[in-house]
Length: 460
Ligand code: ARG
Image 1: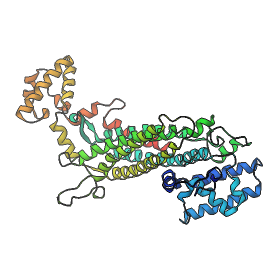
Image 2: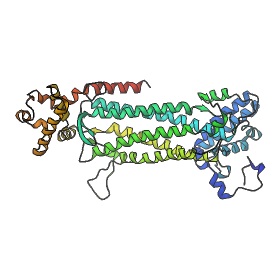
Image 3: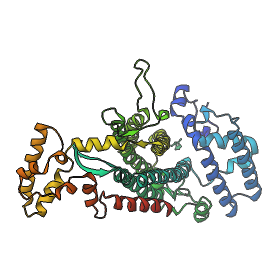
Image 4: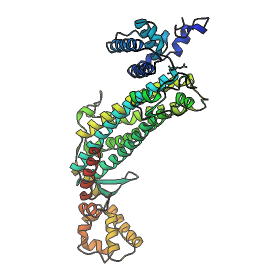
């Protein structure tokens, strides 16, 4: 049968399969509390404008609060025949309070209603995700503070390049998350705009007080064009795009954690609770959590692509296509929230293995650039210094050992201006300490940057 809400025009019942195919209630019931919040604000405004009576308004408030309780208790009877969350709630309201329930939809359409619901939902989720991001950044800041002087190899091309500090590496991650936070907060402003008053597409002749509904719902702005308001899903695309960049970052971090926990690296240890074993190989401890984080990135990218593709070619104004915006959005929100929780808790529990990191730096001739810089200090042009050190490294590769293992006479064979003060230059501490410009890896800078990161979080 057709929902009573629109049955007037129809002569034939909707096909049962089509009914199920077109229904969204199985997933959009997640918006119920926002739908009720929006309806309460709309009804209050209708009464204030004398479009409905105060008695009608009181009845609507009573009915909606009962519905809200029924939903919370899991007693609400959701019906596919009533298509979506909006019509399910409205139909129950009319069942409960009679004629007043039928007046709620005055000056409103499901088109501006659903756009409002999603914006209210997403605004809450954005706020929750923003706090999670701040907590995660703080965890990285604390770890950086603790390990500000711990030396590890820095890589380019995944080959040992120069020594860096572990804290510096953690703060590189924190910087990425700070930009993600900025993108999220920017997107909030565009999400926080009220579509109500746009009705189906053209606006409505009722004397609605949009300003009042807007403040009731805590929206910062109201839509400036009714056609745009009911069909705009940019704010979802922006959120999914923020989420994709965030997941890309967490996937990069995860990739490093997976490498670092391997026996070949052994830089860090992930507590057992973030790992699983193998059903066949007794020695295995697999870094499941970072692997899953890396894997979940794909589905979030997929959702961004879904919503972008959903919107491409849609003519104005609302089209039923838009019903397809919710599942990708909901899954993006859930995936991001779970991933941030997992990542934060995991990073709070990571322990580092400084000897393994030192050994790895030593194997990689990480102070070769320092030796070249030393020769520049003795008057050689940088290109010549580069050549001299290259030969020294080649000798070490052939005969074994690191530059710092070479006796002074051996080094002098590569260039006579090398003197005893070179030993200081070839130490890992000397190398990182020398890089003390703002933004550099010197422990003194990293300790400052870690404190600045924690202060940045505190200010938010
Ligand atoms: N369930 C619909 C959606 O999610 C609500 C809006 C329906 N509007 C319409 N004219 N069919 O988009």
